[in-house]
Length: 356
Image 1 (cartoon, rainbow, N blue to C red):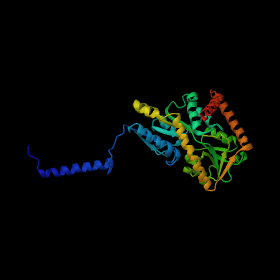
Image 2 (cartoon, one colour; image 1 turned 45 degrees about the vertical axis):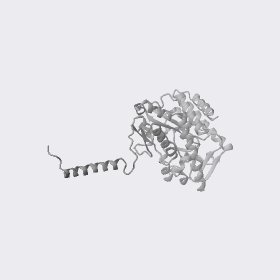
Image 3 (cartoon, helix red, strand yellow; image 1 turned 180 degrees about the horizontal axis):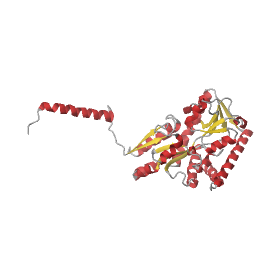
Image 4 (cartoon, rainbow, N blue to C red; image 1 turned 90 degrees about the vertical axis):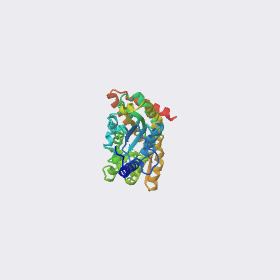
């Protein structure tokens, strides 16, 4: 065998250097931190802008916490604003069908499908959001049946007090609802809007700014915390709050994982997910929303917008409307074979218990 000529090694050395340089650039450029390959990569999707409260203060911090507690064996990619495709109304099915691994949405975007959580969206039911979220998790254990059997529920929660944001002089009495087109998020809340005299328009929250600017709706019901992200304080001039210790309404949310994906994890990583699931996780989410209410309200005040408070005799009138909505809902549940009266009683009792 002939010895290899010294000069013939030069092209080989050049190729080797080029390959090493290419590998260096691909895996991190000038960074010296070694690359750690995750065992499991999970994709999470939601419909809100990235800077909104829930993504910024709950979903992304939750993902990073799970990553840390898994010793980086789990990597979670968070995709805002439906970047992976689909519509907000289809998010729950994306989770259950395995199109995404994790997702956050409103059960109420699927009217009538999740009757158990509707009890918490009834008028003047909620006291404070974290307590109501804890109660909601316990309530679904009692009355949920198979409502969420298709997914691994991470948490159920509610937002802070819902209110009415309207153009112009807004809503100062029940009569002001007459003739208004008001966006509502769920079937139960739309029933309240209709019973109050307005025309309910069911829309996912990301569509609210466009609907307001184009005159499709005259008003919307949402909590304060999301108004800044949607620029609602720029598109409306009057904000109607309700006095007392019970909110006009709230919406329920579910944060869930694909069941098969959860079961595919080894037991120790399932435990990490379990440790970051349940009533306290739901309370965390709702507390973040409540924390954002006051700053968002102040933005509207600083713009010179008007804050209206419904109280006294006018509040009594609204409560009567709310009671009529509850009566109708109980009858609907009874017709569907559920004990609607017991569901309302249990919801109230659990909220009171958690509010002490």
